[in-house]
Image (tube, protein in one colour):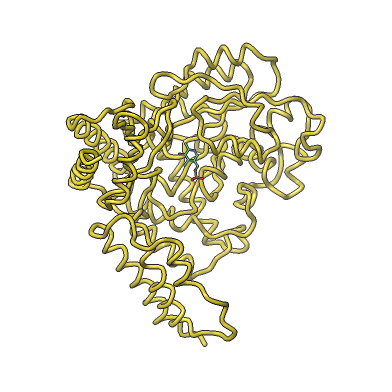
Length: 458
Ligand SMILES: *Cc1c(COP(=O)(O)O)cnc(C)c1O
């Protein structure tokens, strides 16, 4: 039985129908999890079902619960909407069903990662010789980056952490901004360093790193194995740490520098914002997302490391890497935390190819412009803008915390657009993130109207 053609065409048609409805449909779906679980539920059937029937049942049951997060008026978290070429590539990747473990298992997957990885480094200004692991997202990319740092700073102290673990190891200092992303702490937990090892650095007025305080923190502790974790793109304010100055200070203390650039690293891809991440090439490792600002399908991030052998030594499970720095050529499976994995390189290749250098720059510039439009229009409507809008993130307040939360809940219910809430410096604020390639000025204007309408009624 190998007649998948009708089935796959149907699947593609369903996907296309949904995409075509995005601009019109309510952002928030009518179905709640309880109703959807019921629709999808019941006991596991005893006997097989025809695939065509299964597909139709899935679409019918799931449709009322599909969030229009891929659409132009979803401004929650930092969420893009997968580009057409990238989506199509991901669909064909599912059909090809390649395992991206290594070049022997899929020469095509390995080649796509090699080429897309080169384009990514070029666009972001990361050194050409850096290694690139195609990971699940910035969480894994940061975990890999911090693991490479852990390897190198402990090796420098004569300790083989991959062989001997952390019990009895020299203490590792981790110096990171007080406004780092919460996933950094989870990475440190998973790496056995623990969250208590973090020595926080004060943030400046807009949530970027206070470099003088970085120097103070580094000078206040013992010399020894040290990782400095910088950030490009504060998830609340969009602020980017001064990477040039941060790297310079960290270097003087012999630290490994990791940059969490989940979305903010993309500032490098436009001449209008590149100055925000000046000096990024001086770091040792970088974590970046594909599924946020680059608008690739979910489950896409990049773990870059300026030292490929260190990258492999930290995360490869091939014993050869654990003994020295002159290991064999580094391959895809040496750079991620998974062995068998989806061929993510196809979607990355296709998305970058669709956009080209100019399209990527535009994808960075437009959301920044639209974020400023949001801020200006809301301010004109009497709403408080709490951050300096330097990138694609806007924080707004509606009086006290309780009222702000009521406005957020009201806007989420209303359905014109969707935005989340956050707590920044002790205050509840609405967080607006413009990251979708389809968002237009009209979408922003419509959303501003909806927000002001809901606020007036609260
Ligand atoms: C989103 C984000 C992460 C985590 O990325 P995932 O793609 O969700 O794994 C880490 N750091 C920052 C700054 C982020 O915005």
